[in-house]
Image 1 (cartoon, rainbow, N blue to C red):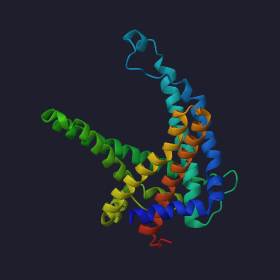
Image 2: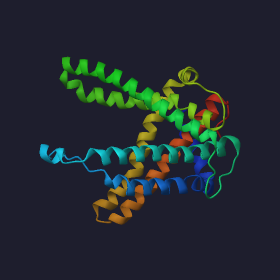
Image 3: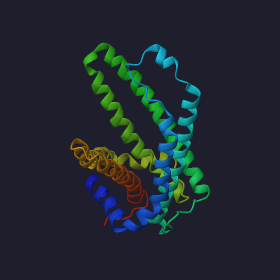
Image 4: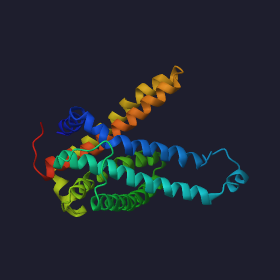
Length: 251
């Protein structure tokens, strides 16, 4: 089932590649500019830096740039995601510059924040329990970290069905999303690992180009891979919502 769902999400993108580009081109371009303008102002913290070098970093601009990037990412990603959800689920065709979906976008961003806060709480609880296990059996440290990443990814996917619901103006609470996805828990595990595998496969061409000195080609391929995996991530949530919540058949 996980393979069928991912295949359907990708098929919807490829069959509507023009609309996928319209829905994402402007938000992704602005995301890139955001990273260039503000991300480049955030200094890289090197473990080899001396305490004096670390103390010399002015944290005010760092936190300011990070805040701008986080807010900008939420708005631009939400803009892209709401546009795609509404195209697939409601048949609203995107324009070259997608329209802001009014209150739906604001609600979508708010729901993203709620999900991130839930993940932080879950992550802290699991990390504390994992820390106790690691204290007793230190060799389990790496395993605990891997389990935490997988767990958070699966929890996010299950609760993220609330996002397409918000995009189309439907009601689906976090608790209801968790309950309705319970019978499909195994499918969500499969989808998580398939998405990870897809990201790895998409990154390989760029790594190969970089290894043979074709840096510009590698950058272009990495940007393409990032765009495709982002739109697939939005698409899989749309597909899951349509299939599990609305009862649509996979084609």
